[in-house]
Length: 399
Image (cartoon, rainbow, N blue to C red; front, top):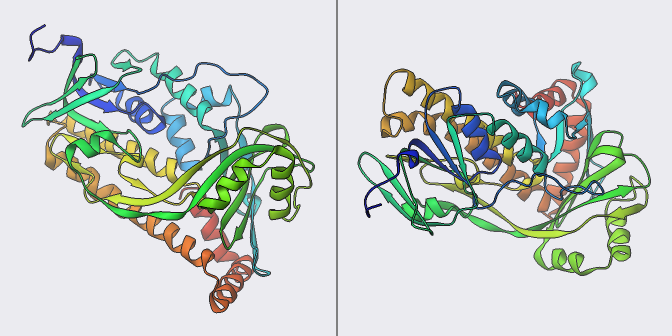
């Protein structure tokens, strides 16, 4: 192969860099067309795992995201593995008496969403992708060079393989290599918190409810998994997170139960623990000619409401709709005028959620007596004002 030639099978319409949940969802959403798609992953999906534990990374999938996964014929693969509905939410403030309880039954709904292990979602997506003739998965790959031309993009891998397409989509996470190579700037900052994640078995059953206690250092969430287990997302100061990670299991179990006010009793079993720093940012632009960003490559926010993957899936669905419409009209999918429609569509919704989560983080981190009174009063009023509570639950459903 000469330096500037590209093998026919590597000359495609859309190149998606990042084969995680958002990138794979986009590939599935584009597949009903006759577009040729290359999906590149730094790691290959995990085909199986031991039955004696859970993935420490989970996602709170809204009903809107569930409907998307059902439309894409992915949901049955998830149901065949395991998932846990959350029918109620208990939220309270550690610094006062403010508390609110959401119950899906008040809306006549079966649940508010599902807590699903990331590896379960990813396996389901790739089970579906394996049946699609126009999607080619390349993994594991290491990217080396990106060239964005007037008519095509060209990606060179570490082994000198070249992938060429009319459009490149960056779905490669918060530290996106593609975004950096393209010189697309971001606006944001690092939070003063890290998140510790793990899973536990508690003395008392979680009652298919999501539980969240807001502490001055950050929120602590117990999210329901199967057989009475719970996923833990504990956002706290960096040094405290490191200290929690260093504790032996008995000491960690005691501190976790105490911080959670023993609402679910003793911690009987603990899974592996990991810590990652929290960030907030949004790219200055979601698109440029021949390039679009989706998911964490375009935006990241605090995980206190678990909405990150839902925003990413909404990005994937919106971009797919824009590209399929352009393809139907025989328009070039990499044209800036086509991609701008996606940017306008998603930026407003994403920014509203990003700003809301940042405001909540600031509100519940404040140690001001006045702010503490305000947020406790707000939680109690929300619990009593039925229309407001129902509106918030509709938002949680993804509406």
